[in-house]
Each structure stands twice: as C-alpha cells, then as structure tokens.
Length: 481
Ligand code: ADP
Ligand code: MG
Image (cartoon, rainbow, N blue to C red; front, side):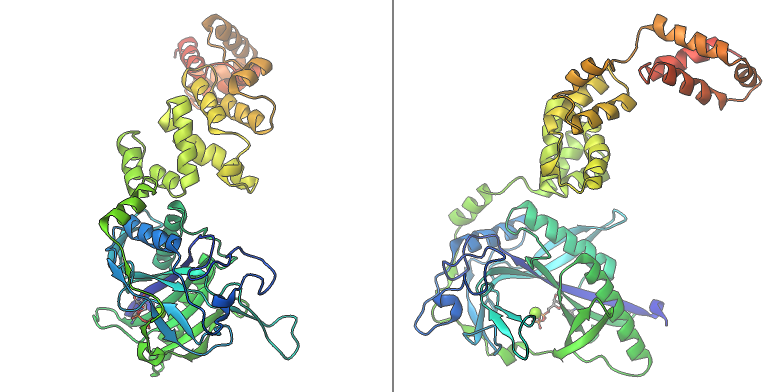
C-alpha cells in the first residue's frame, strides 16, 4: 500500500453542547442523567400548537465562540427547519441554521504535537437543537425513546477541508475542545456526549488540487477514536482506489470493538432535507452593543494570555502553551506567581512537580490538595536559598499529605533549613573526604566522576540540607589537582 502516493484531506464538524441551564427553544432542563422523558416538555415533544422561544444564553455562547476565534459574527442569523423522519425527532424536523449562521468565517492556529502551528479555516458555526435518543438495551424486540436530549442547544463548528492527517485532526479537535471549555460555553464532557466529532475524510493523488469523494464518520466521542477511525478509513479508501474501485459518498460509523468503519447510509444532500426558514422563529439580530456585552463577559483569551506569559513573565513558548491550555491551570499558575514572584519556578513546578502528583492521583488542578498560596511559599524559600530543590520537593510532599499549613511551618517543624553556614558545611566535607581516601586518590588521579560520589555522601550526611552550590565550591577548593 503506497501511502506516499496519496494525500489525506479532512474537514471536521464538531457538535459542542452549550452549557446553558435550559434548552434552546424551551424551558426544560438539559441536566445530564435524568429519568428518561422527565426533562421533555410539550415543545420538545413536538406537540401540536406549541411555539419555540429562543434561549438568549445559547446566543451569548455562540457569539463568544465567534469572538474567541476572531470569526465573523452573523449580524442577522436565521433558523431553518431541516426536515427528516426519525423516531427520536417527533416534530419531523430539526431546527438548525443553513444560509445565515450565527458565526461565519474564521481561522484557527492549531498547535501540533511537534509545536508547529497549522492554520485551519473555520467555515462557520451555527446553532441547532439536538435530537432525542433511541434506547435499545432493556427493550426486547422494541426500542425506547428518550426525549430529554431533544432541544439541547448545540453549536456545530465546521472546519474547511484544511486538515491533512489524523494527528492534525486530533490537534485541531483538542484545541477547539480546550477553547470552548476555556470560554466556559461547553463542559466538554465527551462521555456524556457534550462534545462529538464527525470526520469528513477523502484522499487524492498527491499533488492534485481537486478534492476526492469523501465519507463522513459520525459521532466520534473520544480523541483516540477520532484518530483511529480516520486512519482506518484512509487505509480503506486507498485499498479501494488502488483496486480500481471508487469511494462512494456516504455516512459511516466507527466500531471501536471491531476497529473498522461501516457504512450507515448513503450521504444525503442539503436539498434532500427541504430546508426552509422556520416560520415560528424570527431572524436573530445582533448589534454592536450586544457583541460588546458578550465580549465583556469573556475571560482574557488564550492567545493574549500566551503573549503575556511569554513577554511579561519571560516563559518559554512551549511552557506557556502547556499552562494556558486549560484555564484552571493558567489561573493556578498566575496565583502561584502572585504568591511567590517567581514565574519561572512557578511554571516549572505547576507543570512538572505538581502536575505529576496530580496526574498520579488522578486529580484535576481544581482538586489539588496544595493550593497556589502554599506552592508559592515553597518557591519563595527555594528562591531565597532557604531550601534546595530536593528539599523543596519534600516540602511539597508534606503539604500534599497535609502535614502542615505552609512551607515555612513544615521547614521549621522538620528542621529542613538548608545549611549555608560555610563552617558547618566544611566540617562535613572534611569528614567525608577523610573517610574516603581511595576515592580522593582516584579524583586526584584525574577521575572527575568521583565528585558525584562525594556530593552524594555529603548530602546524605547533611540529610540533604547542605547548600549544593557551596558543597561544590568547597570540594573543588579542597581537592585542587
Ligand atoms: P454537508 O453539509 O453535507 O455536511 P459541507 O460541504 O458543509 O457538507 O462539508 C461538511 C464538512 O466536510 C466540512 O468540514 C468540510 O470541510 C468537509 N469536506 C467537504 N468536502 C470534503 C472532502 N472532499 N474531503 C474531506 N472533507 C471534506
Ligand atoms: Mg454536515
């Protein structure tokens, strides 16, 4: 199979559930996990004579997304009926937006695994309602219908076919996922279906500039499945074309158990849905004042925060990116800087030391047993040489275990203050050198590595408290060759 001969082309459609309290056109709750049909009111059931009322909170969320991506905001957006029959859609149509979406063209800088930036065009993002859900388990020879999800507000975010590999698709989807959580418009919970990805995949001979026929793989609910499904679909299409076959435009499903994609239905075109403007809903107009009020409710955007972290706080680009990826982490970092005035240390310790402990304990940073104030205290003592890096890690562990309220308290109680008194360190150095005449010979004979042995012994004898800088200086002075 000659992967090199083919170029992969991908466009993603992401459905992000807006974190509103109620549905997009009714007052019913969208909370997850309720008894089936306990959160479906007359509007969601599509009973005759009901009227939808547009939920402004969903509009605010969509506008925020447009602002966060620098995309055009549709000053006039129009809801349209997308007509189709399905048991979980009692009205016989889904309310969506076609010609006039709330968010228009934009561009997203996607940071890839290797740190390179790839620009992916945003075609549009439109608001629509979710459908209900068919339940097949627990019903023998029948299906159940749960309409709790019907009418849940979704923002469908459509990318241009700018993506060229499964890895790029994952990087793009992860970035959108981080962004919607960052601006607080979607909880991003993929298990609960709050963030679902459809992947449109085609291949074409490398160098060609016309698009190949695509298939659409629906409802991928993890980044791992997204990557896997795309790779498998690309292989399938290459095999097909190289055997002289053709790709048919269709909707496919990824089956993680069989690790394959399967045809679900042939792809329908927009005109199959007989879209028309919903006569029950007025066009939505947004003006500058409304857009400004949405902007005011937004946090500092990741892009600006990144610039501030690298310019004002002098962090490295990749470090800064790791911190801003998640808003809670960025907030924690900033609070640690405020408490310690040590941005470089703070970045390193939030990402690496605290990060590793949180990961091991399977905790989010919001649940960290050590708060930013406490970590800041550790870093202050590290910076003013009260403790060494090694002891600082012990202090962090003690704070983590709740053995004290602050770094100072733990340093005091456990007697962890670094020994910086030259006389005291010199005494230990002398002791160690006197006890290891063979190693001293070796060192004097030119074996540089032995220095590590002495340092180890000295740190051991001082219980890690001797200032490492001074130890090195004294050793060099005493072992002049
Ligand atoms: P539809 O309305 O049928 O879903 P669109 O034209 O709106 O189709 O495109 C949907 C998605 O498919 C977009 O993300 C777009 O980038 C992507 N796409 C369109 N054509 C191709 C193609 N030939 N290969 C890969 N992706 C494509
Ligand atoms: Mg589509």
